[in-house]
Length: 70
Image 1 (cartoon, one colour):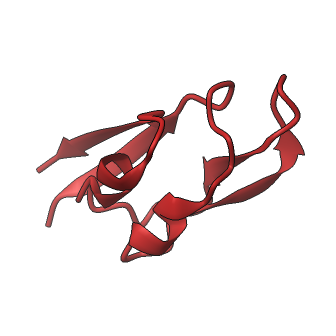
Image 2 (cartoon, one colour):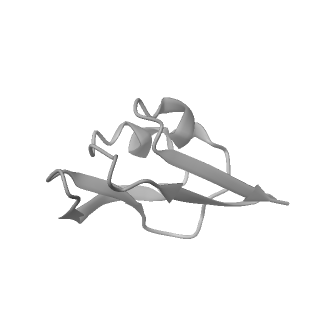
């Protein structure tokens, strides 16, 4: 099974949460904190990421980078 992790550019994230619905393992959730623009950004909330990259594919602003290791 592949193990993945994601990096979110929190300063560019607008908190649209499109990625949360695309994640099969519910790895991403809206943070209670805000970025410099006043948006609640997304953050990784558990370690169950499989590196499928669904979140990065659907992100309209391209702020998610996915890393995967076998």
